[in-house]
Length: 346
Image (tube, rainbow, N blue to C red; front, side):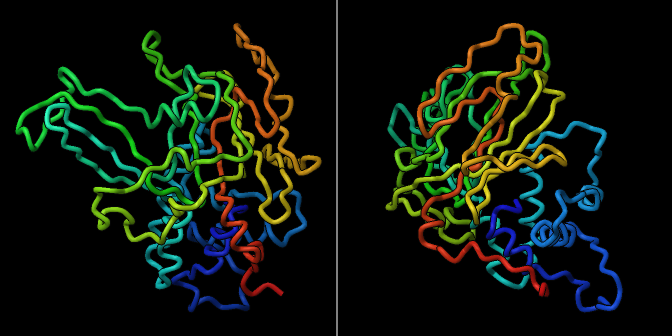
């Protein structure tokens, strides 16, 4: 989140309710979650330390550090918490920042096989959860996410026009995409034989540039009042929707209940890639993402699949868990957006 410049800029503008009562001559001690984030981001931006201890934020969030936490679930809850906190600010820019940056929209469209009535149900999303089982690349995963589903038998749909249950089809239509597109690769699935979750070590290839244009559809027939949820305009359907890979979260380990997370993040200002492995931070050479040796370690998996060759501009991983893409048009239309100043810093 630190490398999302709009989020960082907005958090610096967030004003604490206790700011007016604070004595500037006393040492500052952050208390709320947003205060801890401001403090952490300011240290990350201006400090010469190799890493920053986030214990204060962890304590404010009430997290149990002795328990394995799911990164994707944490991301959901954290964005929801930030959205709720920023919505109480006076500035409309701050109020809608999370929606503007991370929120997209799709519709569940159900079509009755008998009368042809289409019933769209608009919905917001902050990430797309993609099934990877049986797939080799990201495009296949997105295609399956949008594929048509048949509603038959006990799963038939009650059609308001026919006034009874009918066979129908249902699928998701993508309408608007956020500036920051979070893609969750569903590596942890329920195993019916064991009754527990298991991890899929399937190799998935994903591009450095992702064109989402072919997956978008118009909002024809959907009431505009239900489309934006108060958020500012997102990616325009008429424009080319090309995204740049900006982060990859790796889950190392064969179990769904344990393991280790490693983040690869692209610096929005310099385009340098960094590898974050707890307190170890490594800068990648040549401004290129290098997933590293962890992708080739057997890690006691009995049936290993040889890593497939990747085309130029693609990466392949059996441990990639979350992918973050940034809208390319944002970089092209806002050349000065890389300047973020810490308020009060000299």
